[in-house]
Amino acid sequence: MKYQIPKGLFDILPYAKESFKEVGKWQYLESIIKKLAIDYNFEEIRVPIFEKTELFLRGVGGTSDIASKELYTFLDKAKRSMSLRPEGTASVMRAFIENNLSQEKKIHKLYYMGPMFRYDRPQKGRYRQHHQLGIEVIGDKSFEIDAEVIDMLMTLFNRLELPNLKLLINSIGDLDTRANYKKALLDFLKPNFENLSEDSKARFDKNPMRILDSKDERDKKILKDAPSILDFLSDGAKKHFENLLNILDKLDIKYEVDSKLVRGLDYYDDTVFEVVSDKLGAQNSLGGGGRYNSLLKSLGGPDLSGIGFACGLERILQTMIEAEVYFPEKTGPFLYIIPIGKDAKDFSIKLAKDLRHHKISVDIDLNAKKIQKSLGLANKLNAKNALILADDEMQKKRASFKNLEKREQQEIKFEDLKNFIKDKFYKL
Image (cartoon, rainbow, N blue to C red):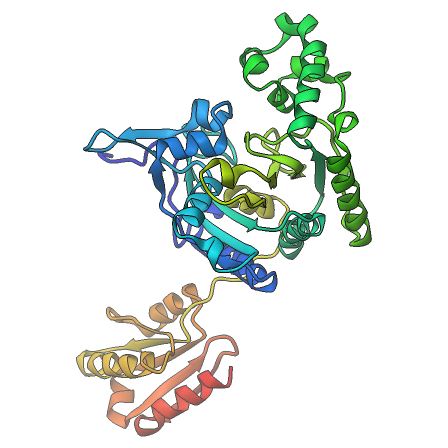
């Protein structure tokens, strides 16, 4: 084959052997997300898929894996460095600042869905173009809004009926907390420096807290006795975290405190959280996020705090499929018209136009030759009804209307046909 899709990408098709690539499943997931956004009063924001590279370097942090290894970067014709967006938060913050959204109201609840990009080795649940749901709350620093954001994430997974999930939560405190903790962590790690993985050695000076996020078994063994950041929380950070856990208890949201959870982006502070599944192997995170109290200001915007989360839609779909949770059946047209002969075809085309203008879904077998074969196509399309117009029907001016679910058939006069079909459709 001359042209093939680049490595790490995939098509989303009307029908697919790998079922998570079937568009109907995506549409179902997106419909659940959109309803969730309405229920929590989040408004949609849409941002470009590429931005100036410096936005992402500043926004996600130069020591993050995204910035150091995974950015899809290119020079445009004016030799300016641009990058495909690796995540959504930096772009949303840029849009918030550039469009002066802070003047609109005090608290902003935003969500977005769309493709993100990273240059990384493709593996299960991790693609070079992947899709994310992201939400951001800007302008509210309370522990109550932290709880609402976490509840929203867990509600999404509950509505999708995903089993065996675990909510991990931690506090990485404020700047003073992290400064004191980094010193203690470096003191702990120095004697074991030569035994760390290459990635962790690279992080040692730049961002030692990211070592806590290592998946390398050697690092995990070393970190088993590492000091806990929870022992270094400032009074304010400790109170915020305790209040958050208290309200999660009141909301009956189950969680596990994981003092080594730091998340992968440099802009987080205070609350961080992640939801993991036992269905995904090594890449077991379904979604997560945290609080970023200084990100907006660092990008040149107002001094407003924020909190958000992001979820990979591919991983969600794969988990749903492996857990054999419910997907609705693919819906087909309300009416499938089977015309045999030129006169029947001409009549059908006009009838279809009139019905479609009344928002009734209709398809026509324009190559119909044999009724049984066309009825088989109607069933394959999941059509609810079929309308047969062969020579006999055209002579009698009576169409055969067949309910494919109940297997009931009746004849309808041509002059009554439109009203009959409309009546059937609007009674659904």
